[in-house]
Image (tube, helix red, strand yellow):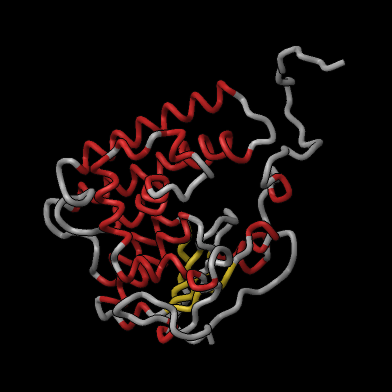
Length: 291
């Protein structure tokens, strides 16, 4: 006989069982490392520790765009962090990001290494360091507003809609409806803005687009959460679709999507990247194995 009575939270929550769902094996209510392991360090100024999730893609796209502009100081080593296996809980990674989330960047270009964590912070750090993709005119405020819009909005798409629609152990109508409604609202926000300008901050491609595109562009292209594109009817957002396709055709974006990718077709993977010669800079195609 099944107990169908509604769940009533106890006065004090205790961690006495796994939460269930796809990522239950790595979820825990405490921070800090679970094992000792140093992070690898390559020969380039920037060391990236990441995975090709939407948050990880933001940073590899930024780095590849900087290299495409000729910023040699943006050369980087990319090290794969397999979050399903708990790599983010190593002592080395926790030292780079105490929140144990990818991506994490360590800048070795100065006398003292500088750690930067949280994808939005990394984009802003790199934009200021290299003076690129962050407007200096009156559109700067617009760019930063959309950058931080993404930081606040994406958890509703990923941890909210994505979790309950695709990953939760049981389908809960209320939760799916709640977050589907909010995701649709956010898609409409973007579609309306992109009906006013080519990119989020105006006429130029900026870190705001780099932050938003892997999440909402991925949803628009049907690459997030199985059949969620059909469920949310994303084809109806015509301005979002136009913007998504425009960005997807950029050679640096094509390269950035490959880095730290360990799934899909081999031609689209570059689990670890240690040299710019891994890519044909004109086409974005992978031309050699990583060194």
